[in-house]
Picture 1 (cartoon, helix red, strand yellow):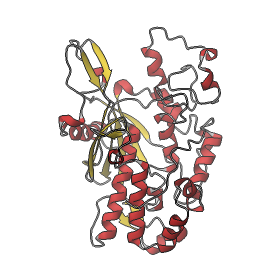
Picture 2 (cartoon, one colour):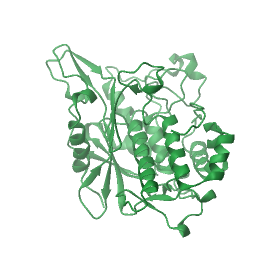
Picture 3 (cartoon, rainbow, N blue to C red):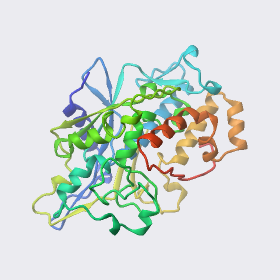
Picture 4 (tube, rainbow, N blue to C red):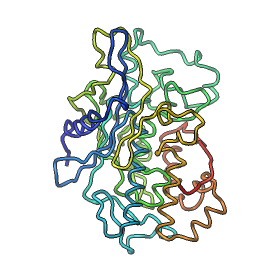
Length: 384
């Protein structure tokens, strides 16, 4: 059942509108207008037409992190209050659980759908045509003019480099040359296989019901050909469109749909009276368990190296919450293993994530070629 795209978009827009000024760009002046991208995940019960908004923020990946943070706290709430009924997740029956050590004791309810609204087309392959249209001269930049450091990362062009190259894995635009962080288009394409769950959340929640049903974009940001090339089974993902995996994983392609609604802080909303368009550096994170304003990935008002500046949705704090749930569930052997080998990289490489690793390996080898593993932060897992 396709729920109305405008209603899904409106749920995200209204929730963002309800936030205080602290979480938003500054108001437009004659000198400049600040814009910011907005992404949110909406949970819809299949039998109903209205959605329950969970998240509102300024970028797709922040939205996905916050969604996982929400799920972790729903798990924690169910463990501490066994009689509590969550509208989002449930305890799985014993006969449903076949995972090692009895993990993944939770599941998202079968009658729920997950939708994402984004005010901008995802960076990377799904927005390349829009990038071409925005150029004064749409002639692609010659590859031999690319920075030498980029050439050392084959298949990983920066987001806006050589925009004639379509259907390839790209790094985030604006990212430093040293980073391996992939574009939102590529990360969302992979999420059609691995689900929306992050690695730590996948220890607790079965992925089978954790896939996006649709992504909603403003009409001006939805280029059908680009989205089909990027996300559809007939596009660049065709080599792994029929694969089968274990552990609840599958290829669950989402639909990309258009909305007539737009975001008041999108770059397209710039008043004629404002001379300059600027990107806001404020990110808002919102769901029932947390409300944060972030500046460059840190809590607003905190110094860069201040431990108290860590966001609730950063990897270290998410793993800490996962440990809290595991401890409350009563998994002494697993907790002992973590205390003996607490590095997060060791755990991601362990057999507990074997099914997830196999999915990612198949997709990146056969479809998202050029994907180089981003080692990211390797830290010790500590309880919160």
